[in-house]
Amino acid sequence: MSHLFFTFLTLLLADQQPHKTDGSTTAEMDVLTAPQGWRKERIGFPLGFAPTLPYTGFEDIRFAPGWSDEKAEDFWSYVFVWYVDHDPQLNTASLQRHVKLYFDGLMETSDAQVVISSNSDPVDYVGHVVAKDAFFTQDKMQLNFTVRISECAAQQKYLVLFRLSPQKPQHAIWQALNQVEPTIDCAHPAEP
Image (spheres, rainbow, N blue to C red):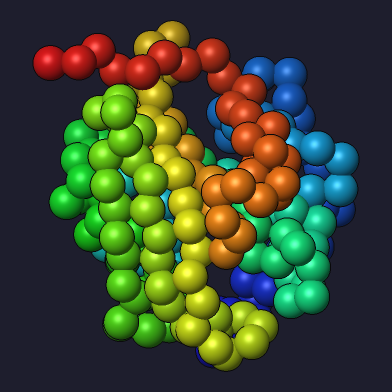
């Protein structure tokens, strides 16, 4: 539980850390842009809470202003991107395994339930995860999410972009989540 306290403290202080967006190096630049008031955090792979995720690179995160307020409409609403060095070669089954590893570690559980389906585009996915909220309420919650995978040819990197909220996709928070975009110009990988 001590890493949860550290993570929470990091989230509270993350907005006070300087971040460059001039594109000088990926270690210094923000990969995501978000509206004013969103908190940010960056975690390098391997992730401390999910070290078996098979990536190198980092995770860049943006938290909605009410992310930690269980009475707010944007409670637990956030966006993160895995900025990775190699093609993640994700499909529905592997993405489901990776999301489960991520949330089992984040929530210090082993029973996160993940449901993912492919959208009309083979690199877009929708789904939800049901897990115990180990940060705030200690109750089970469902987070709905979308995933978009892009190749950044100029940088020789890949983006795996997640948007998450307990709110249904019709809720206004999804408009705000969709405003959080990569700062890097990337395209979808070519279909086989």
